[in-house]
Each structure stands twice: as C-alpha cells, then as structure tokens.
Length: 107
Image (cartoon, rainbow, N blue to C red; front, side, top):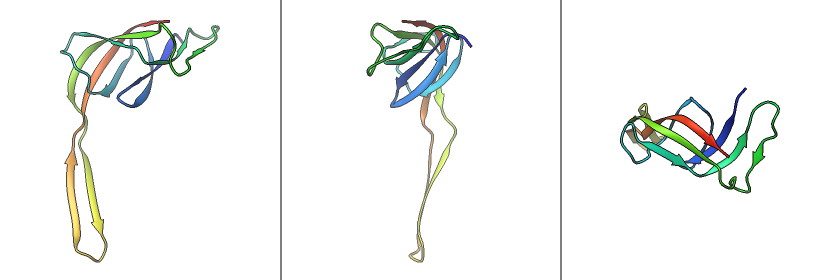
C-alpha cells in the first residue's frame, strides 16, 4: 500500500491515494483546474511509517487534486406514502458532483 490520506469535503470523509479518482460533492472550478483540500484528518506514509492523526485536522497537511469532470450523480427516487390515507408522493433527485484526480499529498 502507498501513501494515503483521509480528507473531509462536502460533509463526508474520503480515503484517497495519489493518482486515484474520487467523486465528491460539487466543488467550484472548471475542468482542468487545480483544487487544494485543507481539511486532512489523517495522513499515512505507507506500510512502515506511522499514521499521523489530526486533532481534528493535521497541521500543514493538504491534498492537491485536479478537476476531471463536473456532472450529476445517478438519479435517486424519493417516495413518500402514508398507508390507508391515499397519500403518495414521488420525486427524483440528481446530486451535483465533481470528479477529482488526486495529484499530491503533502504532510
């Protein structure tokens, strides 16, 4: 296993490694732009190195990523029903998302 980090963006946590593609909540920027993610919760240097755990974030740690795609996630169906009352509501939702390629992990 190589170097990896745990980052927080969009209210969710993701385990990322260099060269990896990850889909996150929508981030501003155009395709090809570089994004710096500062909320790094954990950094591990590999098999032999001890992991650095933040309290709550690791100081001076950041993850650099390139925006590969801006798009929409798969559609989900929101269905509400109350039995025996004749109440039904069906609604669809597609969350906006950004696909990132992790280029560098700095600790």
